[in-house]
Image 1: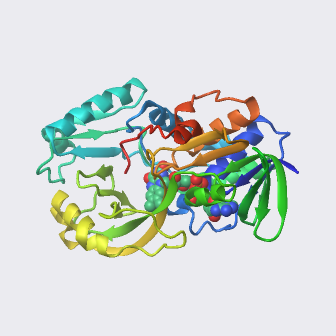
Image 2: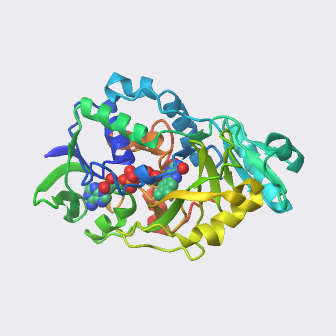
Image 3: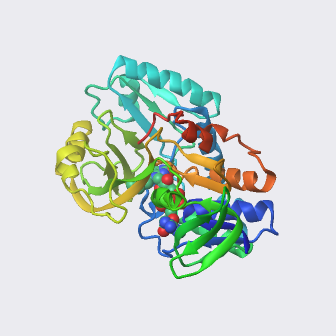
Length: 390
Ligand SMILES: Cc1cc2nc3c(=O)[nH]c(=O)nc-3n(C[C@H](O)[C@H](O)[C@H](O)COP(=O)(O)OP(=O)(O)OC[C@H]3O[C@@H](n4cnc5c(N)ncnc54)[C@H](O)[C@@H]3O)c2cc1C
């Protein structure tokens, strides 16, 4: 019997384990993870960005802690983490609007973000042209730019440091898969493992990423989370090299950012919906149909762009409100969730891991109140929407 069993040992499972051992070193923590290489985990397939530019306060505050944690990673994880630096590149995010209404929305969001410590500036087309002279601003009414505390970092470094530090503190990673939970009248009693074992625990945490809902079905519970495929293109454009560019979110929905002399670019497919759990085939057609035309519109240098590589990863897409589903499940009170991140979970791992560990150890959120992202709203069918989903 372990005190806490965590299903899924990528960034979220590792962060929960890390914070649990920090808050109560006497707890026994077992993490079940089938894939030590993380080949299909969202953590490994992510675009590794962090931003303060969200539309609700709690997500802004989660990322405010995230940036502090990323910046100060070596101090948080110590020498046991083995990752002295997460290579943060503070290039910022730039959200572009194409209408006056869109510009006004960016203004009011920037005010909210600044009130929580972010540095968001809203620039008119002249201001955008001065700051990003290489960009074509046809049809753009405004852009909100985060000149600090936003950018990209080493996703696998974040995972490795948290995992190393958690293990050094005594957390155990087992190479296996939870095929089902076992449940009596309310609480979860055990996790059944693919290799045949049955593990009992006081507390269970679902950190299974895009596969989290399948685990819930094993005990007759629903989670409105499904895997949605996102294809990321690695683009070489010798006439459009702007290594200091931010991650740009175009009004067409495509995003692009610099990466080692090239670019990463992606978009949401026109017909978005759930995909098979094992479907990681990139959607090649998106390049010519959507991504390349939008890039070319934004900068002529993309005329000669070519795709050098591409990959597909899964968002754990929360169909209710595209927001995280966190904490204790009232239907099974010893079951906790860190699920449904809908494409912004990497940056949320530090604050979410801390929050879940606080709920388990202290019985409630302590440092940051995450109750608006709790399970109850999902059971009530009450969306708590995040509009800035990239
Ligand atoms: C293309 C793409 C771009 C993204 N860009 C960003 C970004 O810029 N910024 C950002 O913050 N976020 C981004 N995200 C989202 C972010 O990657 C995820 O929200 C985050 O990594 C979620 O971590 P996780 O540990 O919950 O899930 P995962 O990383 O998916 O890990 C889940 C783990 O659970 C394991 N598992 C699955 N089923 C079971 C089971 N039954 N038993 C035991 N283990 C199981 C899996 O093997 C996996 O390792 C992006 C995601 C994608 C796909």
